[in-house]
Image (cartoon, rainbow, N blue to C red):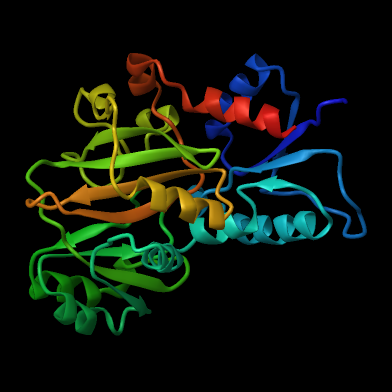
Length: 307
């Protein structure tokens, strides 16, 4: 039986090389479909291709604000015509909204910080009084930690809210969230591939909230570099385990997430709080090289099995 070609739906070409190189290594033919432009004939039937969605919630930060809507329409069209899309419509919806993510976490009994969703900026201050200080303000659709800010006082938050030109949320939704104090400046990101935990990576957060693990991100000191030690920012944890991994795997299966990075933080008492699901996740090459665990290679192997 002839193996299918994989068509990768994308908007950021800088994130393609790890997966395209891995697909070539395992012998899978691929094409790429740039969703920043193009067209599709709506009377097409099923394709002989397998599709992989790589559109990220951070698309707007690269000037591609409409691409997620394009991807949603295209994936709906593909799936309604019987095509298989890895990280398809349900996964894309989860990627694009932290409100949906917290609903999913709640459904599976997974702990997350106290959060109020504000539809516009007018209710941010009232929500903050409910949550208390310090707190985190973040956009519902961000990606890479973009737009995440910590406020220690009502006065500091009010000063920002009074200057709304400084506040931008691509979907108009802001999240006011409980700040979780930790004993160490770090978070843990669990990487799931094919529905199972592949590894967990410890991330140093001393440099702030913008924590994209991709090599392309690290080339921009304003996004991911941590002084001269960007390579030490990510480290894969040996023999990681946690009691909530099984629930995470069930959740990702339900939401049809072929890949996902789920981040959590622990408070000073060791209580974990899950707070972000990145469906179209990237992997840090330096950390993987040290641990000899390669996410893109594992992804390519599982895609080959699906072909």
